[in-house]
Image 1 (tube, rainbow, N blue to C red):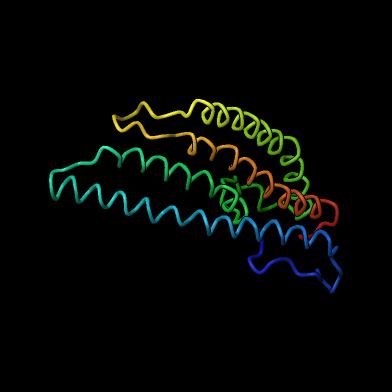
Image 2 (cartoon, helix red, strand yellow):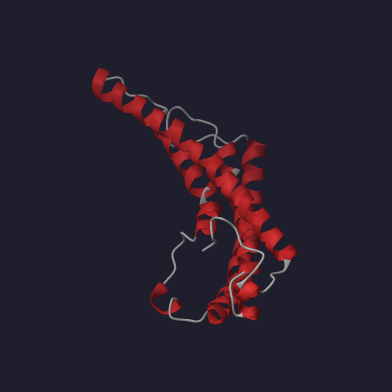
Length: 188
């Protein structure tokens, strides 16, 4: 997990760290932090829409036809777009029973290999397929069949490739950290 104050330019015993790597990692992490803070604002219309629906439904017996669609689109967008921020914060699932006992170098090797051979190819496929699905949805101006309101969903489908791109960018930062730890035996 990244130190929230950002990496120092000096490692243990005053050993210098590569300025370029530190700058790249700080820039990418700053972008993940900024995007996470921006996307968390989706909670506001989500809560307002749900609150309105509950009051309208139970207080006035006047349910809306739009609340379900708005809720799943906002929550889905919040969940997906927050994935890169979650990666930055180290919040994704990891089995720590063995991992914590390993040395920094071993963790770096395992993480670097997994990022290189599983994460990046998986995210590249996610990005490629997401772009195709979103482009098709935009081309046909897709609407939802899930409700009588039939809202447009092509902006919602665009969240998929955006999420993949954000994860790839943050994955680069995580890979740099892992590779540095694998080579040097200490965190970046």
